[in-house]
Image (cartoon, rainbow, N blue to C red; front, side, top):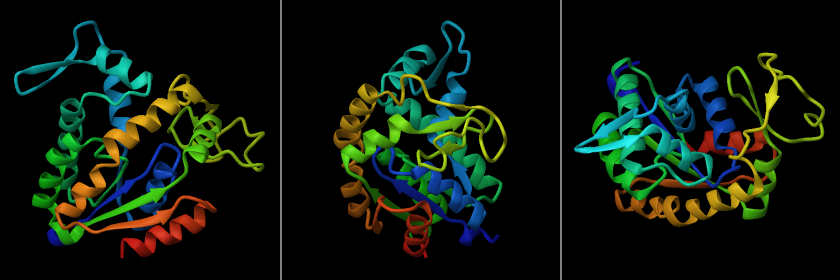
Length: 233
């Protein structure tokens, strides 16, 4: 792929909108790298030692403190998240990858750090943004019923076909609920965080003259995927 042909697709939407599922499908069909912010955070939180931190400027962000925020549904400190995501994006860009981001940036601060960085690397014409809309009621239901697989963290949607599944149909590992993170009480907090801290990014994107396409998160996975595929062409 030529340097000028590399793209970044950003999927926005509330918890449970299907961002992760759609990002995985886009990555598979269009050979994008799915940069999953939650997975980047999970990796940084895996068995942190007392006193482990990430330094941004002159400030230290301690991993145990950030993990506590994440586990209760509150967004992690934006400078901390931005640093981790920027490092990952730069590595991917240097290896010639096109990228799909799901739910990142998550705050206006992160947007003001990441978007000029992305524009500089990829150019405005190669940045595609899709907002997946979903009601709060549907968000709470989907999150509180969904599971992920133990091995590769594949999300498995709650349907009558998947209701009795105990193993991931893709890799055979056990299906688990994300304890705490997908509890209804935590999801209410996450929705509030989304409304107050993430949704204002849409106005910021438009201020940067970046086009934002809106698609409904209702319907089958394949129907939503088709709408997103058209939106990013």
